[in-house]
Length: 348
Image 1 (cartoon, rainbow, N blue to C red):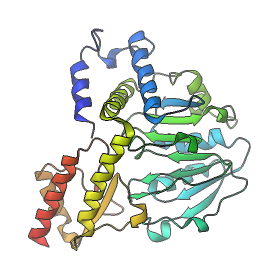
Image 2 (tube, rainbow, N blue to C red; image 1 turned 180 degrees about the horizontal axis):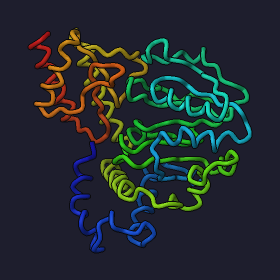
Image 3 (cartoon, one colour; image 1 turned 90 degrees about the horizontal axis):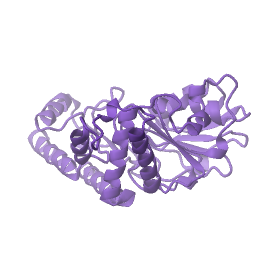
Image 4 (spheres, rainbow, N blue to C red; image 1 turned 135 degrees about the horizontal axis):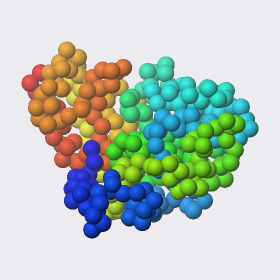
């Protein structure tokens, strides 16, 4: 979802952005109108997240999946090993891509639990000679989320925050690089945000394409090529919406309340079940199953009739998955809870 207020503002500006006579989609990305949109979006994001000046903010294309390659290309810096946590589907994809460029040490592996928990910290196996440590803050498919930020000492820490960025405050200084696909809490698909310390620039692997070099993008204000202008514009409207809401502290209070409501309903029912370790449950993605999986199709059909859409779980897991990102209002969660209660009373 996108916030309704954002959609309405985009609708109002669709044909004529602020008297320019152009839609944002029709603007030159180097023209003064679009330059003002881009600069304001970055400034608002820096304000929201208190991003220090020694971090570059990049608005890139290729989604978070492109970062799986760009990270080793840019951050190995003469080393041959990187540390990765394996906590779900996106971790696995990041690991597979990193193995094209370096040796990968698995710090902790959640696959034995079917990605329902994270190994205790005293079992984590870090490398002394790793170029960086990578983890996925929240695994969208499995609904597994780190409760704390791993302490990696002097080794640079890289995090995929595709489904958690902007859902709560983040201490940017704890990380050397943060990246996130836009299509969860930031805006529509087509954009990837990268927040990276500038002192990591300038050490790409030989043969790295220009489009995969963070320094080139930073030096060109994310406009080395034509960026995803409309997605960037809509992300900027989302940043404005969050600031008007009271910032990320206010957003966190709403998100935590939404998640607690849904997990409480599941945990107090014998009809619904969530398999994830309670210590590592996602605020954003809540997978759940029914006591009788033969009722899944009926549940989804009834939910759709009630206006509750895209609840089908990932094909690898089955069941249901409720994604309750920033733009999902609390009323939406309440409507889901009402439907779940009605369905359980009828079929439980």
